[in-house]
Length: 375
Image: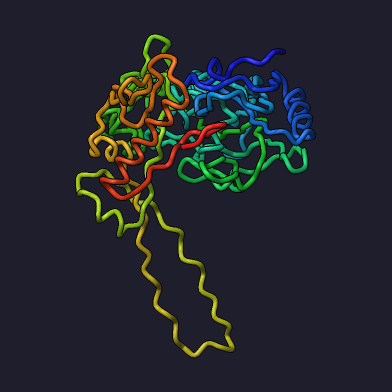
């Protein structure tokens, strides 16, 4: 097929046309397309929902493989009271959540309304309101760029952390493992259509529930969708606040000592430190003395949205004559207010980084994958 401008295929609505575009509607087509592209050695990237991409204005001198596979296969789980769903990488994430809720399967309902495809979900360990995909992910099927081999990889080998994995292309670095996900297998709880108590404090708070309140999966999904709509975080062609890549900047993870330099009002959450390694002392060398454990202070995650707003940039802020602006509903989202170029969005992003750095001494890092554009 001919190539389309990437501005038509990304939620930020930026990006020129690639030299080559391949549509893959089945797993076999996807594997063949990737092996073919990799054999050329040309620049490439895989495109799912385009909701976590920021693409430059110039034509992309390389290949884009569009992942259009879809389908859900229900399988038994080795754990009683649970069910496994194997889902094709191109399947729409929110359609999967709707299916799971309709089947009475719990574990992903708080992630209703997140745009994008299922295959992209583990790459940055998507999450919302206390639920993350790491909590239900069993395994992925993927194809490695270095070998072209297809393998099934357990979730434990993906290095899943806060909005990251070994597969994620962080700004300024390359992924630890260059591979494309073909399918995702989730392990979900058989909850049924009835009401139940909500376990997580974060989700209960978001839903304004008391610990003893019982609600259905369907009720949770609808409330979450309402909340996301109010923040412009559900794609809506009539709402320019939704022409974004979601949160453009990551919440910053800083040392405990640096966090103390920030105003007390800045929201922050402790990041659990790695457990101390097991201390092994050879018996022949043991003299009865065991060194005391070292105290490790947890790193702290701080709110990027708070830092932006308190550096003097309010919701809706834009530079003069620019068509790029902060969302009027959410200070973390950079939005395309109508035919903004990637250059305009990048200019706004750099301005925000500069203001936050001058006020608070840290540089916010972008969340989306940047292609053909730099900050």
